Length: 94
Image (cartoon, rainbow, N blue to C red; front, side):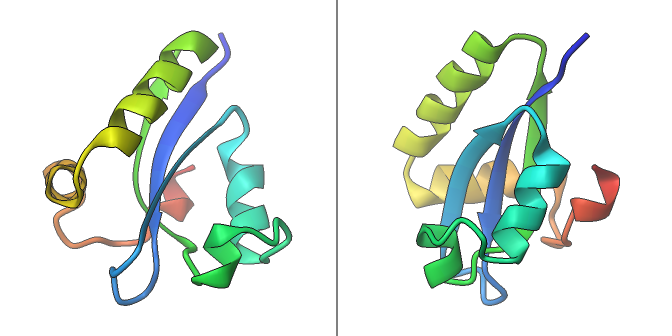
């Protein structure tokens, strides 16, 4: 069974949140941390994994990513706090 991940990254001051999805989260995190994507996350140093969830099907991960992206900041923070109240980097759990 394949896993599809929806995840939230932040920077060290927790001022910026980024919502993404990937089938290969470990590889994607390396790309974010090394700024090899030359994207939003690199520009704002958004490399700390503070939330993730898995889905079985790609369509579910796409739907969930879009849902979370539409949420306001407070809802995203509540979601992170529900799993990771200390905002630790969860990269080691992937």
